[in-house]
View 1 (cartoon, rainbow, N blue to C red):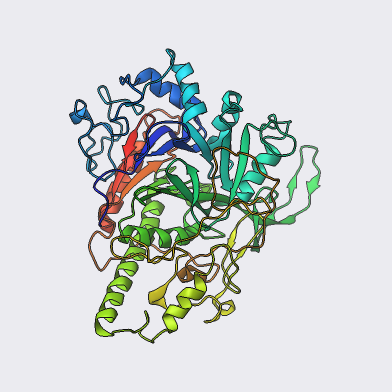
View 2: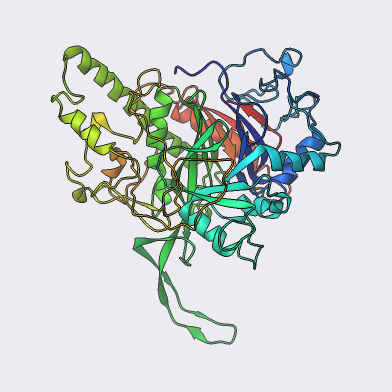
Length: 562
């Protein structure tokens, strides 16, 4: 799809599981291949397992390179080209050893594969000292998808290794940072190591608005966040309340025999998020989800927003790799999903993505056809009307669009019913849907309407600037700015849900896309291999759906160049 022939990202898996064992839960390192290993060259995406994962890799697979300043220290090394590291690699998801994606061998051994940290010299002798050096020097920011402990526990513990000479950024949406600030770094559960509320200044909070412009998070990397839903709970002080649903808690009897009267509690949606990461050198992107549930089972379905954006990027060749969870196999009943995916629902969600890809292709084909048939006409064949709408919708990522969307204080995206969105209040022609990004041509290039760089506003809400030298910041408060989402989503009713995959007009619409499976939960029972079950069920369901994508099962120590 026009992708670059060389990889743009290097992803190292520090932890890939969904528990319950604490030694292998969500944690990833990401860097731009275009940049050298060095200070602030990498980010951590979630940190349930973090320093322990780095130590484990250094113990079991230490790097052999001895030169930090080697001219080849940014070139990915494959087992077949270990003596010729400058050999180019294809821009597809690759691993440090050959894995046949059509086979069920999902946990291959890596006896001779190069270390994920190959290519740069570690200054110390012991793995623990070198791991601390990697944490303190290489990692600039921690991007947190949500605040469940299996995604932040490593970060919390590892702050003991942070230093004032290399303070870190904690990057997430406003709600997640509010929870971490209030419930973790509060001098009760853990010391206040942040630079807010009188903390010691080892950590700076950076609040991203969902759907806002890309924000620099490391040398050569930028990020954009979108909220997704991760189940529901009754206690809504930690999450945003869905306005139209309530749960009835039936009466029960206490241990003392006293009847507890029946009460109605509003259900709260647990916010998680998905990050688009962009390589600033190649403009390629990857998509990484936190924990997420299917839209068909959500009180607040928001996956469609992400899939619509991803489809645009896939069609122009900017996106070919997606990290997403599949916590259980298909034996897990629907009432025990707890805001997670199984193979049947992951394939359902990928079917939604496939249909969005086909819509984008059809729209672009129609646009080309109209351009050939009409000289000087508007995008919708009605003169300047369509162009005027595009200018109106794309005017400012942070500005309000009346009648389009709304936000809660926790950053939740709200989609109004169709009757609340008039044609002049966010509506747009179907073939001219605006995504909040510059219009992309067939090569993935912008049309000149680039998003201007932005900085933290006076309220402390982080927009687009990122400084390695100034970790400070003022205590934040959310503003009334409204994120832009695609009008194709804004025009859906608030209870719109994804449907099961249907036959596609073109075979294999997701051909060339690699899906990296994360967060598989171990049952801790003899004779049950959930990873193998998930793998085989995904293969079978993908074959039946005809999507064309490939799967890779994440595991600790896996090193991916994409």
